[in-house]
Length: 87
Image 1 (cartoon, rainbow, N blue to C red):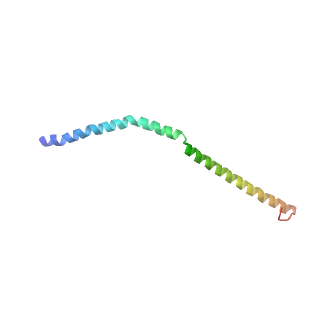
Image 2: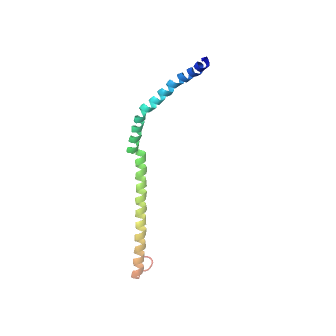
Image 3: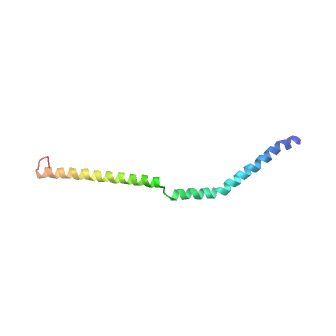
């Protein structure tokens, strides 16, 4: 009987800490979830800058492609009209 009592005392002392930790986790879970939802819902300045930079690079790529196509079309029209290659 003494053995069981001696083995169960450390277990009983450790259990309240475990229960307290679990209770703390359960209580703080909604706060953590709310903070994570707010983080997902908002955009940081760094993320905003990164998205803006990506958008500008894509726009510049589209403009470059359109300019290249316009130059190609202009050269073809000059050739078709009979002008030399310096047109």
